[in-house]
Length: 362
Image 1 (cartoon, rainbow, N blue to C red):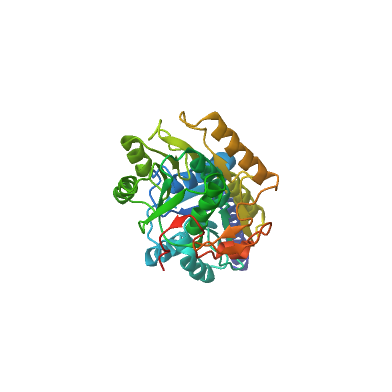
Image 2 (cartoon, one colour):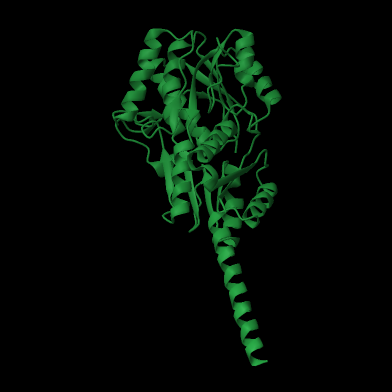
C-alpha cells in the first residue's frame, strides 16, 4: 500500500512538472501583444492612416513574435478609457494611444495596470509606465509656410483647424512666421471645425475659405476633402500627415508626411527586451519623423529651392521656426531677434502671432 502511494505521488509530481514545463513553453511562444487606439478610421488617408502604417511596420519587423491589434474611431473621453481597459485586460503588453484627447484616459488606465506599458502621442503627462511622443510638425509648417508666402496671389491663406490645442496653434503660428518672412502682406484665415475627421465639415470649411479669397488651403484635419475641394475650385493646397496627391494630383503643392514606423519599432523592441523606460520624445525633420512628399506639378523651381533651403537650415540648426523677432497680432514684439521660444513654452502655446486673422477660441 505504501509503495502504491509512493508511485502515485511520483506520478503526480511528474504530471505537475510536465504541465508546468508545457505552460512555460506556451508562455514563451506567446506573441508580444501591441495595441493601438485611433481617433479616426484607418482609411482616413491622413493622421490615423499614417499611424497604422507604423503599426504594420512593427509586424513586418518582428513577424510572429509580435501580435498587433487596433481599435479605430475611438472618441476622446469615456470611450477611450473603456477601450484602453479592454486592451489592457486582454493581455496587451504595450499600448499606443494616438491622439491628444486620450491623455487623461491613458494616465488613469495605466495607473490600474502598472505592468502594461503605454505610449501617448502628442500629450505631456507621463508616469512610470507611460511615455509621450510627438513630431515637431511645426518644422514642416515652416517649410510649407515659405511656399505659401511665395505662391499666393490673393495674400489669403485658408487654414482648417481641428481643436485649439497647442499642437494645432503652433502649426498655424509657424506657418504665419515663415510666410511673412517672404511676404509680409500675406495673412491666414482660420476656420475651427472642432473635429479631427469629418470630410463633409472639412469640405464646407474649405469652400468658405475659398469664398473669402483664399487661394491656398492648409489643414490640421485628417481627410483629403479640403484638398479635393481646392482641386475642384481651381486653387491649391497642402496634404496633412500623409501624401494626398492621389486626391488632388494637380492641386497638392506639398505634404508633410508623418513617419511613425521607426519609433514604433524601437519602442516595441525596448518593451520586449526589458530596456523600455518612461521618457518624452519630440522628433522632427532631422530624425526623420517629419518628412515630405514630392513637390506638386505647379510648384516653380524657385519655390522648391526656397523650401529646400528652409528644410536644410532647420536640419543643420541654422534656423528655428520660432526664432525671433516674433510679433503678436497687434505688432508688438514678443520674442527678440535671435531668441528662440523654449520647448516648454511651445508645448503650451495659446496665442496667435502677427499675420493670423481673428481670435483664438478659448
